[in-house]
Length: 636
Image 1 (spheres, one colour):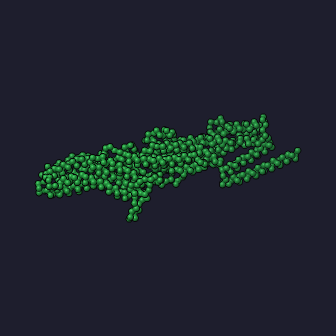
Image 2: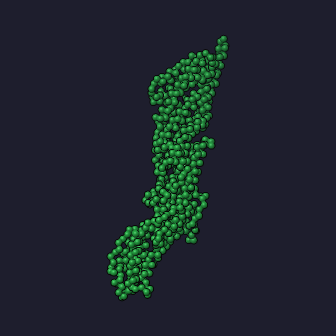
Image 3: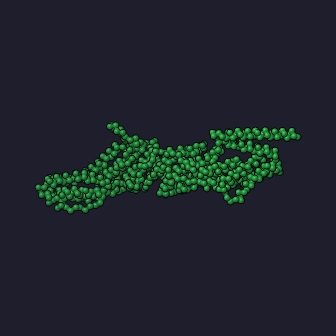
């Protein structure tokens, strides 16, 4: 039989040469950096099979003794850690490497035995069962080690480099509570430039342990425990995401729970949501996707699958919160929150596409775009309801002292704040028709007019102020004294003009609107002077029937009545008040001095209550908003 033994030896050596040559080719192919993940994985599996073939050939040549010894050695290394409370990867790289090697040897043994014929009660089957039991123990241990590494080496990050526009707060009730100018936050520094160009990714896990995690992934995948690895990995990463949402103060509320919140609480929750959505999508999930690729990028599309499983629940919760907000009600103060939410989602739509681009017909991106659309509709609806609320704001009683009405303050501060959202509102209002009562016309002098004046937002804002003017005109008719009605309109239109001139509103209203409304409040000042002082001054005229004494008495009484009443009226703007006082003096004092001069020789001095200087000083007490006592008369 020596010939047969020689032939067997020759066959064995030939097979070994073929296997060695194949392994060399695989090594050369593996050095190509342009290989896809699937191809690289196939090469790894093929190399493992070639190694197993070598052992199978060895087994066929020498029997089961060597295979059994290899299993015993690997088994000792695995079982040693079952009684050790320490964690393998905490014990150093040498221990971890030895454990990984032992698990690979068990897998090799199982492949070797799998290539041999099995008898029901034969030795190969016994060894295969034993190897399988040890492998299950090792896989369970590797899951524990994986979880520990992910927890122990997670890294926090700060979002201070991410820009967040300042939030805007407005307080509203059905009677348009007064909004003082100083409480309106300055939004001139809001960045409307859109999406930042910088990409934000951070290390969620210490980069130094990524090779350790990949080694666990490789050995579990090679052993057929890819599903178990993914479940453990996904479970840990979902917990980490939930923890980060908690750190961002995001409460997980049901839609009903959101709808039951009081506005102050809800407004705070929306602010947190706007910040959290931007951080989670732009930074956290982008970083999570990169991490998934680092660990699972060599295993086909599993990195995308795991990322979606990790992120889906949390992203859908964030979107469901937005859906609850979009349901209404559409009170005016909610417009700013709707716009904040719309803008942050519009800014993030490219990020969402990048995150879920590999998921065909992604439910997540579909929900994202649906919410973006609904928030835009909610913002538009709220904007138009605001205009309707202005028109319907009825009053029973005239506003005190002819001052600036709370409605005027509210509306002008409200629309001033809206200018911070001009790009978004121009987009949302672009297809909405509106009657512009103050259309902007081209100028003949070639002066450039800002494009904002012709924008959809510009037209809608001018429509809102027109509605406000109509409402104020109705309110002015509640005054029994027509003069006070003119003071009321003068105050309110002047306030509107000042708000437009001193803010970004000027770009949307244009200089022509300002000139027109300057003329309006000045006309009301003139109308006030005519209604009040034309009558008083006319009492000085000699009609040929009234005595000098009676004319002096009637004039003085009329002046006293005006003084007692109109010192209580209020013109809040100091410059406007001074202008009106001066204008009134210019109408009254020259006429009074002329009267005194004409009647000086007729003994009028004994009928005169006030000198012209006294009267001039008294006119400066008008419109201060508090009653004044009459000055001592010169003589009576």
